Length: 438
Ligand code: G6P
Image (cartoon, rainbow, N blue to C red; front, side, top):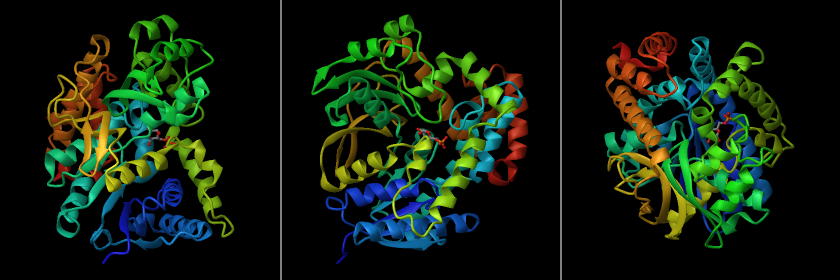
């Protein structure tokens, strides 16, 4: 008989891994993980060893009986897994830098998960997640796949539409980050706050906000009209919302909405960084260097506070809460990326949405949100059209589909500009896009 759960983390050499380990340590009583396999590719071997050794020290210091294994053999590591978590980046940070810099060189927003950058991250990542799914079918067909890999919504949708693995959940830290942000605004404990989330990954809205079950949405919107107060993430420039706009919108936008409702200002800031200091990928590269220097220290056996400079705050908490609720059939409410199944009116049944769900041993069951408010529905639908087209392009390697996806993205100004960016990015990422070149 198995002694406890086997978890496999693909992209185990990521600088975010200590975040996850901290979560597993804190929840070990309720979530008895016995084996944790950190898996990476040959190019990530050095990082895997550094992070893996820190993970071992963290577990040892905490006195928790989790056995940590490091592996470059993905399929073997996956054998008999109960949960598989994915946090990999195809092409590593160098590819992210190209995703940001090429669009910016054409005067178009360059961002990891939005606009042309998001499209290319999907084109590179979807074939790899589908390979992972094929391996899971063979060696751990009953495991749950918890995907954090970005663009999390598109990657999750590709899995349930194009693979036989159906026990898949996409996870993002934006919903928990927004609940934490509201708790901070109101100066109360996070677990008293609940938001009704509906939308897509990095395009999610808070339709209502409750404290102890009583709505406080108007109060929160009022507080957010103060330019000094905002709900932000480390990777997005904080800018307060125009008070009259926010009041009229009447739902909570997420930090990524800055790219859509403040497109001009955001592009201006990004272009400035592009020309002067460096894009987010370059900032993260520097941060990673510092992080790995810390991780190497044999005396370090906790998650260093320096990791909080990354955008992924609270990932560990949401990941562990999700796995825990599936494992214990907890039936609590969490916002995740899952199949719509009619929860949001007008979005295809089999498309991924980010929505509040009841989490049980059968996974997420989306709560019915109905029709989105008219003012936000159009943008959500447009992004879903972009996402579906992008997924089809990633699967087929069809140039026309990729151009269509790029052009219908609201952050791209025209078909001609889309074509120029597309051609340059296809060439730059050729190594990771065999479906377009065979
Ligand atoms: C936010 C997003 C994540 C993303 C991260 C990037 O947290 O929700 O999906 O991975 O930011 O942060 P980084 O520090 O890599 O720019």
